[in-house]
Image 1 (cartoon, helix red, strand yellow):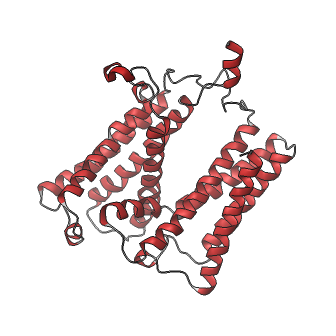
Image 2 (spheres, one colour):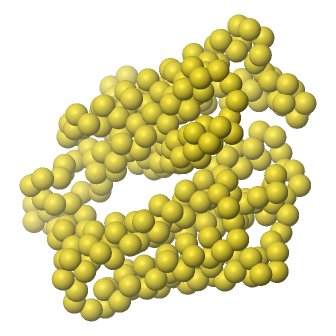
Image 3 (cartoon, rainbow, N blue to C red):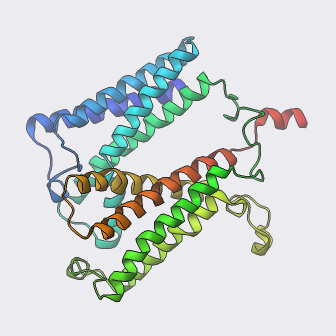
Length: 321
């Protein structure tokens, strides 16, 4: 699909999102899980976000067909980035609902909530992709691979920058802070919680969840920064030196990182400041702060992984051959 068509499709998606939410704002929406689509107020807010996102995508579709200077492209990129980030933040409950459905099963209103938040998250991601494309065009990135040759890494074997390692170990530290609260609760007999027992969550499901949580807090951030997360290490035998599937690591890192940052870093911290969360200050600090550092660290390390794992530039490959 060409850049222009992709941006038109993205604009149509945003317009549909805005129209559906305008219909809900006027005539009343479906039954959502816990009575709301988002932590933030609904009504006309998602309509405004959809309209702004549609405007950004349409502007980008125009720049794909006409000659626009770098300043104009940067402005369109910023507009789409802001709209995309706002949609993702508004729809931050989507990954929470996915996890809830996987471990607790469907409940009344969960399907409507999943579709509503999923469409918002998808619209946000579309805007962010459009913003990235405009930014590359404005910065005169290579049209074949998206690199700035001479400054961007050219292969997976290149060393990750220092800030990638800082992000990875920040994520591990955030996970350790959250783990300390879980250990205290386990020793004190407060884990699993009464709510988990009431919902019939089995021990096997909780063990699986904790194992996955441990991998997401240790193996995943380190894989995003270290070379063995991009190229299989020597001890893997026949896989040695081969490329690790890019989106296996990158997609997981982006999904978990954005989910933790949005849910705990933005919504959770806001609720804490407003006094909506009860509990000892140290416990809340370790929970909210730990999850936030974990999420932000994953996103930072994922940004480096994204650059390091780009496919080889076809133009350079042709010149060398």
